[in-house]
Picture 1 (tube, rainbow, N blue to C red):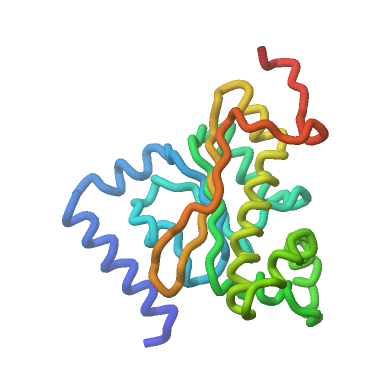
Picture 2 (picture 1 turned 30 degrees about the horizontal axis):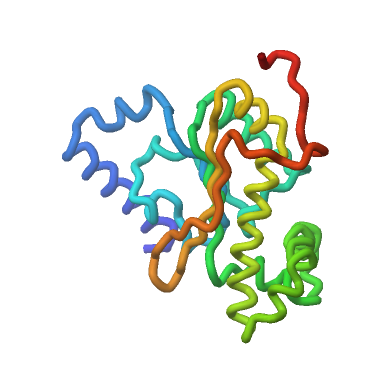
Length: 213
């Protein structure tokens, strides 16, 4: 049996188990999508959102990319963000990085990796801003781990700078923004940052909205 055939077989077994436990499981799931969370995570295969949070299908809207980035020119991410905030009405957005992130480690080097260079430059900017703090750390693992945390914080701030989030903050006092880091070695999620809808940003990043009273 080939690896992809095994996936199809496992899918059938999973679906069968769900129906045995609840005959209406898929009927209910297909009727509505009403998640409370938007998860912006790393594409790393070791960090699956539903498994590590023990959530069911339908409970979390998920977007993943290399190193869990919130880039203001990324129309894919922005489309997901707008849909989650304006249509699904999520109450929480969680940016989740992970220790041992290959994208973060690569951004700390001078290696040319092709197209991904352009993406990793966003992480290099975070490194540049915090270089003095990071370079004081005792070894490469500690430096990379701290950059993972700082990158998560920066991406949460990038969320707050979007008109999508600011509009929802002013109009509906949601969503709460969270920055988490997942430990590959222990399976634990740690919160390193959060922002509520009353957070004040630098005025240069603030938008005026005529439809918000």
